Length: 112
View: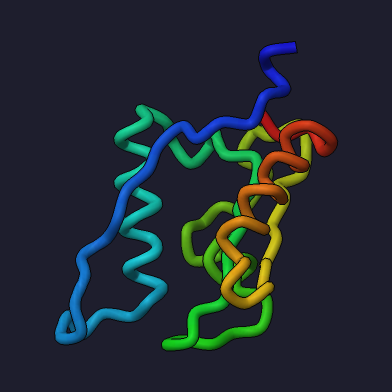
């Protein structure tokens, strides 16, 4: 079934630099907004969010913090299924672990 294949729909980066005087959260939200625009999607198209903790702004449950800051968890947003939020921290392997987690979310947890 083609709809059950995990794939990247959009990508982006935020500004980069040490002297931006911006929080890591604001930079992540900027990258998310840019990626959604590039993919011609809105936040309502998202079924989940996976994040890895930032050493510059450490938090417990980073993905929940970012989903809240991006207003992805508020209200029912017309959703028929719950929004899935996962924080992944496997050190240097986190990016690969996050890709595998996204694949599992699409194939086994109904994210599309």
